[in-house]
Image (cartoon, rainbow, N blue to C red):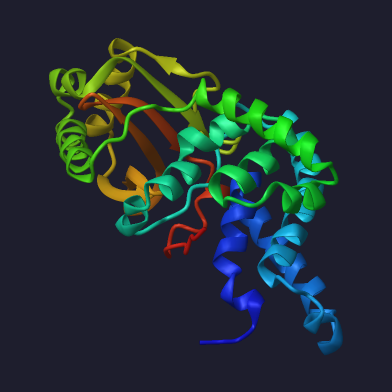
Length: 292
């Protein structure tokens, strides 16, 4: 076990940056920038850091806020729907309910609707239980202002986040039904496993064909999914865990083509977040360590 605080907290720093940015590549850049600033401190300066974790989180937050301004401009020019970069996670991540929820596609898309400072404050307070005075130092606000920001952000997220927890056993059962229906191209089975008001949000980034608007309703979604079994290619639909939740990987002719994060409500799939942008699929060959 290393005694270097940066190494000890690296997965936490990445998790915080990722939740603030929704991009693993940008989160890695922020963590690297944080390391460079930590490495620049000499032994005397490091010895004067009373709480290395808080110090490193503060640097990550400031770097993430700077990066968010750049990302905001980039996302304004994004082709079609924008979704977070998916992370391959172990099923164990789902056991930490708060962590799994905080990195879920459902939560990250809600966080996209917050202002930059609101998002950072929410992540630090609600996910990492960071004291208000530490958050204030990180975001350049007073503790009182941070409390007000946190309250507004909490109410905003609470009004939009999924409210029901689903057991791992139920998730796996629904995914199995879904995969059976997709593999067989069975329209009725698809209608049975999809919620009537299911929504599919697809992110192709302009690189591959994808609907540029959400597709709503089982009667529209089921036929689209049913067509996969009739394609003139070899296709596989494989269960996996993304961002702490159930998901499906789609391979065409042996090549990873897309992944879909699934939201399950009352025994049916109520939302699919499908990512086909090849630039966002690069990290799916190995699990990402997350912590809080």
